[in-house]
Image (cartoon, each protein chain N blue to C red):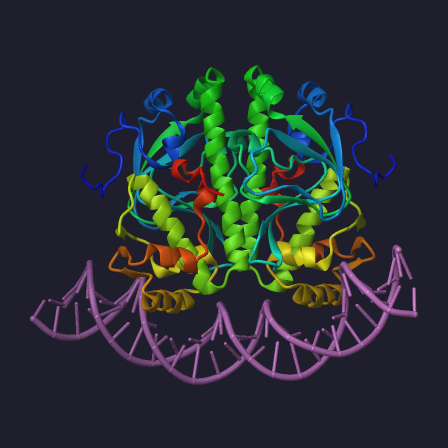
Amino acid sequence: MTIKDSFYNDMSVKPCGMVDHLDGAQWARLAPLLTQHKQFTPGAVISRRGDFLDYSLLLLDGLIARSVPRGQRARSTFVALQFPGEFVDLHAFPLKRLDHDVISLTDTRVAMIAHEPLRELLNGDVEMARNLWLMTLVDASIHRHWVMRNSAMRALARVANFLSEFDARMSAAYGMERQSLPFDLRQTDIADATGLTSVHVSRTLRELREHGCCAVTGGKLLIHDRAGLHKVGQFEPAYLYMPQSEAAL
Amino acid sequence: MTIKDSFYNDMSVKPCGMVDHLDGAQWARLAPLLTQHKQFTPGAVISRRGDFLDYSLLLLDGLIARSVPRGQRARSTFVALQFPGEFVDLHAFPLKRLDHDVISLTDTRVAMIAHEPLRELLNGDVEMARNLWLMTLVDASIHRHWVMRNSAMRALARVANFLSEFDARMSAAYGMERQSLPFDLRQTDIADATGLTSVHVSRTLRELREHGCCAVTGGKLLIHDRAGLHKVGQFEPAYLYMPQSEAAL
DNA sequence: CGCCGTGTTGAGCATCGTCAAGCAGTGTGG
DNA sequence: CCACACTGCTTGACGATGCTCAACACGGCG
């Protein structure tokens, strides 16, 4: 098996990651609705707070942030990050209206699914509906973890925990753990996600580097000591509800 | 109409608040499954992180926190608060396993709904399933708001925003706005919910009192200047997805 | 080449946490 | 009845964590 640096070109192959919560047969029924693809460049606004959506997006490649603008021309706050193999705004299917912006952080590829045919599919497929429900609830569990992280942890632990989550979710998307991951976030993105300033993120990353835990350089995240990073960040992946971590908690 | 200080005794009457997302006919079908009631005293642990649940709870009266323990014998962090008329752990229906503790903050009354009959009901009622899905997604939207609040706001705005949310959700539960609400949270509870220390919450409440916004005394929250409180807390209730705020955003 | 976006470093300061003491209210037992 | 303990709130003093402002380095790209 070769390492993928680009994700999910062939839609007949079920992606790894979040959509693992669907079985093969369910994916085969869903995939035909995911025909239309789109691309975005870094910084592109995919949809805005208040928009009424009649479609949702499955992220195929790249990183997308759910973000709330703060102040006038100040920075924004990220309330969620989506990885390849995850739905970006499936919650818009029942909710219809967005409560946040959706922003492309890197070069991204997405597949669109219109709500109308999705509704018809789910009307006849209770199991799949429950699995899609479940996937939005895993998102919610991750939200809760972000609340905890950004409320209760100091900067060093907070950033270590954030990077641990990045590693875990990226590994899920790849289907394997790696010692070096592509990392296309800027330090200001880490700042927006952790509620710190980019200046302090810079200092914190240096500290993690000097600890020998990990290093962020040249678009790569190098994990030198995964166990140490998890320890510093008090990282316990149960909240991600991934198949391999089901035993824990 | 008399003001209710105790909520939801008669299950044939549809509660206000969150369950407003169900219509009368749907409530009539759901209510028969909510027969078994339970009570809890302040501080009672209703269920624990890691528990496998085969039932969910509808909160009838009182306040319940979803909480993650932090450290050994340190304080905990609240990742969510539930008000009367809301499901406490409906997400356990698809997820099965809890990622946090559930704690009674006051004297509470809940109605239980077993997952097995709920599953059967929803198998034959796609609309209701979608509405329950929606209710868990409103929870998720509130989670996102908590991430923003506890990441991006200073103490004064943070507490003001928290109290504004308390007011709005309590008003939804009552079905009306009030100038004086029962407020059974201790300052340490506000601290756990906002990521501050109880000492600093005390100072912040004094500041809000001196501002003339609101006062917390003797188990009551007195709102002297709701508009001012909202302004200090930059409160915009759209994220609560309540019927009356549908226009906004 | 100059410019822009990004990251790094330093100095000073504000916000908030920690520690400690004291006070009011409440419940308990003598 | 009071003594006592206990919980929750308040206030002060001090210190640490992280923010602000500013300067500069570095690389990519016109």
